[in-house]
Length: 280
Length: 274
Figure (cartoon, chains in turn orange, red):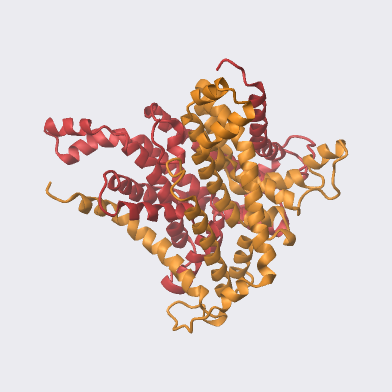
């Protein structure tokens, strides 16, 4: 048993390293290479005249509204998930007693069930003939043609899709939060609101941060929800990347945009720093 | 808790309603006897019957099941080894952790187009089963590692030392002491890997070949072409039911022996017990 520990560990990790190196790191590196290619030479191993043309196109003002819209969708989705997820997480962590596990599983079931099915459910509900429009129509809030192809539809779909990502880390943070702090705060004369903002929120902040990250990143990259619930006016960065690799066939442009999306993710991760890491 | 939090409970109930009403409506409408997805006119299983006569659906389902099973086996084997590799600190562990967190943070569309470029323009891997397997194992691995690792961390060293003191070789000690303790998490990891693969649409949509399409990609393509039809709704309901059954089975397996572990740590990952 004289084998050094790192050698054993590396041996156990070697298959993982090989698989991820080959099918994750290498493909990502290739995307970076493509992003500096010109449209005709989006070919691996070709001797490339490096060019920044794809980036110039990607950062063209014409794409700016799409970039902005993507960030707005992701931001609003994150805020909505926080608004819906916090009461739920707090309730499960503090008031559910022995039903905690069952309720957590209940949050997870929709999340693990077919992603497409969930979007189609909303497609049927938000349609002009759909249940939502008929219910809202009954109280005079209906909308001609329903709510598909609106920003609202996309945000609802994204919120629905990623809400469990918010609830889980928030739950962990709420369960760890020492409730005696709240009582101490009341005893010291703080009102409910100031207790919430000055005691509870800082206490569960790692969970808020981790949850926001887990919601923001996939909603910024998603293109299926905007495509199925929205229209051309709702296209996002993800859907533009998708277009370049399918119909548009401009791989260098698509790659440059993919790299920009990755950079955005990295910036968000680095901005988070090391806080909230123990919850994630 | 001395105050009963009615208001909070009501909000929580509304959030659950938000989570379940759409799926519930989908399931209800799949038994509708007209084509309408908005008005119920009567009960019927005709859309389900139509599914089982559709050869394309059955082919796609077959491929999805084979792919999910293969991917789950490979990801669980490779991921479990890695979870044991990360058990104790060693120089370079941080690098491995970063590598393993990559699949969790790279947007799926980026992973999909990257693998498309890699398979088509560099590695010459034909699109279809092989390319899909490469992708699915790559994004499931991290989940397996997260689930198994949290259980491995909870294994008491002294049990293994006791086995060694009683004369068990390292291999026997591993097989008779360590593995049974970790087995529920390995099973849960496999279930999650299966689900991730079975449900994936974004990454897979770039990697399916001619005549080899997975069920979700087939559904996505159909809906893109002709809108959401009752057949697609019935198919989606089946997929929801399969996933839900597997998830609940996975959770029960974990809860079976790992009662003491906090339930969230299994899913959120890396979470230490409180």
